[in-house]
Image (cartoon, rainbow, N blue to C red; front, side, top):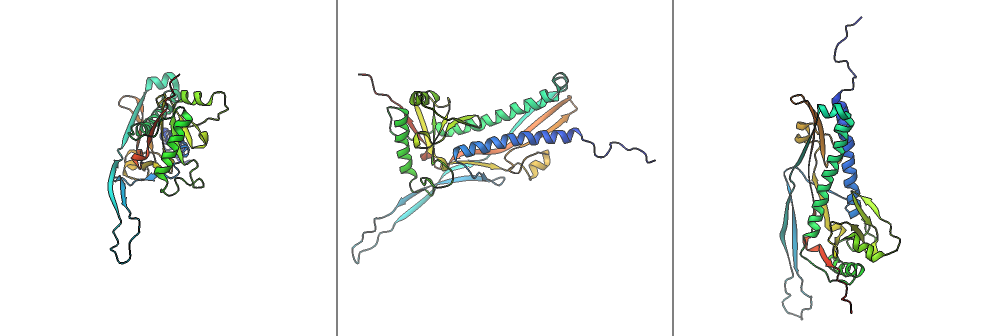
Length: 305
């Protein structure tokens, strides 16, 4: 009889279980991110190689009208390309620890798994905050409106004018659904819609309305000040990330990720202080390709007579 050796082959170890847990929460984050991109019309994220940055450009066109008398010198038309934004993707890191006492008291599901879910939700919130920072920091405006509908209509008209020459942006048959996305306060939506039946959908912790007033997707959030409206072309918003899988970072820290690699997670047992640590890392950003294409509108009801 062969002697028994330890550890036995085929055992499910703590490391195996931790990896499965990591994959579960990575999938939760990435599915949420995918829903966010679908809501905003961002169907193609930008994958950025490690160590590189993103540069956006402004174009200034000086195109002559082409009317030149016979024999006269034809004036030059010119397009000038100049850098506008340089966007660096910085590695973000989060760490959480569950003590042996917490695991003993609440079980691993309560001490590790449930708090992992809270950590992922908090990381999603940072992405939401980044989005609103980009949207609400604009200095470009559209005409005021006496109601939400009028303010959105004025903004729709200006956005259409701004993006008319951009491929696919104003084409109703182009991929990506609604051409424009608006950010509105829920109190303004309630005042506008009254008793009308409104179908709200959920994605990434946002509530949104498709085909809002026939002009685009409306993201409804208290992060927007009552009386303010923000908007841009859906294709003007970009999501970019450095893959957290397949590279030296993932190999060094044992990061688990899905096929997208937008975020990586690992768990480890720390015997020095008897705890289980969760480490999450990722480098991503959301930005407006054309900063001047993000507008702010204002709802200003007429004064009572």
